[in-house]
Length: 295
Image (cartoon, rainbow, N blue to C red; front, side, top):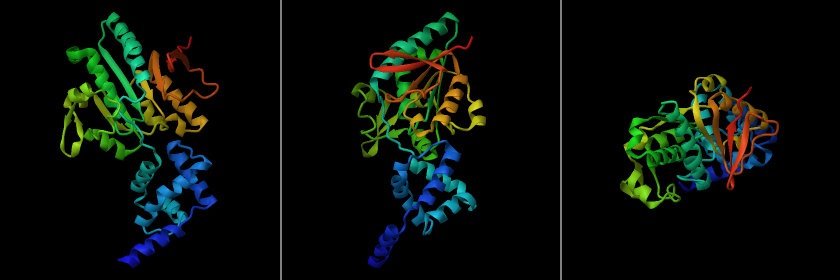
């Protein structure tokens, strides 16, 4: 047993990613996802993929690249690859300032306009939803705002992610106390059920409001099939894309928003230079983006 462990450790040390390996894998990932890995992400990619090479009994990144391109089981492995390169740092009620703007300004404006037109429809998109924390946070905000009246509204929150692993986690709806660290205690008691191992499960009422969908934001055919929304959340996702891909994805978002609809990005994210599809509006320390209606 000790010999096997030593052999594994030595093999691990012997596997290194060459410049050519990194270039090939980066291009492959970019072509399939639109995610562009900067040069400083090379060693992160190397460290995260070592375990995959060992599991597949491969001895070089060159062999791994060939596996991704030609092996009959490549699609399953590509899914694993995407899960490894995507950072899943998220939590409920993350960036409370922006969420307050969403609740107190944006939602009230949308509801007012809907009622003026004798409509009761809400469509919100959580683009790049990771493990579902954001989508369920939106559902909680809606439940708190509408109370029992939410049953009289046609509400749909569509949440998508590239990672199938994250989507499976989100659909289970079971979270650790760490995921709820920013969530007020009274909301945890109201919308979660304490289960074994000290974890919390969302109540069915929230689950009914959210639909999880596997989607690559750079896939033009699937993006065109998405419905029209009043608000799109896309927080801390565009940073993974190169500028050209960012502009293409923002063009998709523009087409999928109602006139004067809202796009909400991460706290440190800005639109790429030359993008005039959305008008920035500052509230307190946050910026939200409103669709510019073309004349």
